[in-house]
Length: 414
Image (tube, rainbow, N blue to C red; front, top):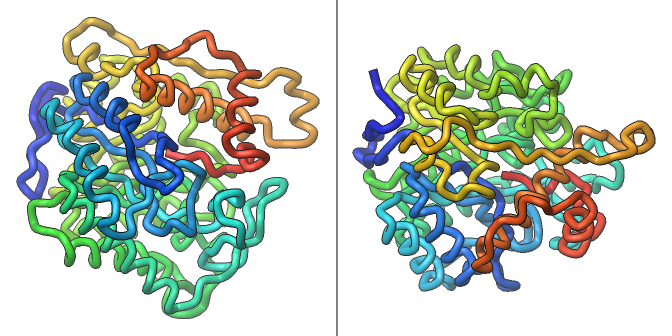
């Protein structure tokens, strides 16, 4: 049976050196022109020396008019090709493959970055205070977005990325098409489960048609969105089964949205204690994915849990997210036996009873933790060590400075 140390050959022939993946974390380190610069190069150089078998970037947007948050890298064409090439070289010099996570935020667009109304499958606003009601996409706009995903993937290949991962989780546009809560359409893009999943299938097909066979195409999928009337586990099985025959090289399992943040481990203490929040779901789709490898991200902390998940065949790749923001060599620490468990750094707001009267306190905690870990990435990118003593107040102030009131809307994803 496989071990964490064993290389993994993907369906396209690409070989991952080991089974630990640095999962996507939104870095928000782009220039004002939404290009990568030396900060991202420095951050990824550090991670490339951390023992990972694969590095996946944070949100790379396919449309500069539709940003998840200020500071997202955008790839629409080859205008930033030199900078993108330096970014990929930073990881290749360390011998590690890098994939770009490509995304469209849909209704989760940051209003400060847009200056106009977000777009979505249907005009359904986020169920959070201050959320903007999106405008329904036209059929022509949907086709344009599909083409944008493909163009972004093609530019990524030219720039030296080893693959792309379509972000189909955490409430972004792909998820919005899949969910009956956010897709109320009755045309070719909605009305039943088959038409709701057409968008993601067309995105993957278009990408695969525009890149070479050796270029990896993966997807991050929700097991469910954990909302009544939303995207269900049974529907997710149908999506996984449909995608498995579309030439994918890796399916990463996650779950939740920023209205119901299961991916942050905020659902319950019992969920936290299980470590891998979505491993049970991964077991149930093993028979649906065929030869497509499975990655599971969310909650892995101990070497024992990681080893067991791979050895027992529950997943092929273990994804580590937030711990890599404070321990950049987390994979090497686990693989070498230097540590048996990665540290958690979870912050919670005080005055919980009072805050709970005006907001979803669990969602606020999730946003606080995303901000705290994002600040650590900015420190590493500046050549500094992580600040493990950074508190709630300075993290909140930092988020407001970066994003204004949008800091407390569910825009800050990974």
